[in-house]
Length: 234
Image (tube, rainbow, N blue to C red; front, side, top):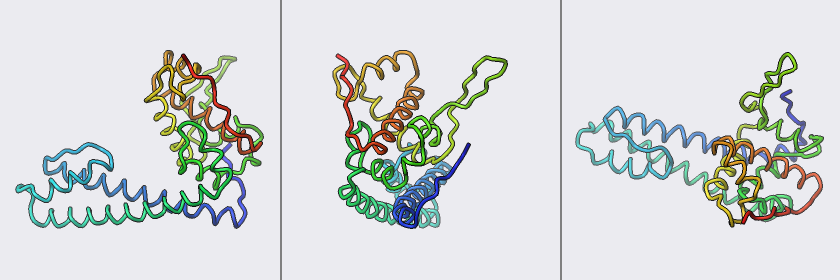
């Protein structure tokens, strides 16, 4: 069942900065996609991602085939994206300061693929007491498959995507960063992960790893334990 844990006034206040950053990131993504979409109408196709928008805007400002009024609009959109970048950077600095001052966040940052932003987001938005086990926490985030079982036969579908989309996204993106460099001998390459990658596609493995990360995060937050690094695959 989709449930929303009750938060205190202080917990609500602490999450405002996280939610505001998410809003600005969403607005920046929309603005970049708008620039790419309008550019495509003029026959200029650019790759996705924030890293490519600066070069795209520079090209649009010099392209002779683009009318002056369109160039003016592209310039305004570029300034809007730059303004959002500045605001997001300022919020991330505040989050990093909170991370350094938060004992739980520093504890979680020891997990491979859990950076300061993910760690402080978890520390500020998750109360482990609201979940009986790590499995319940992972299910609440939406990292467990939907059940389509009938007649005594178990059928599992795609993940439920219940709960917080942002928390799920942070864990999956972090899992993908680990998988990208998963090779025998690396600190983050456990035997479990390497065996999983041999049997499953990378994206499915990322969801499974994100599920495992969620259960580890709950255990560490609920018990106050430090991260215990798994043996490295030779």
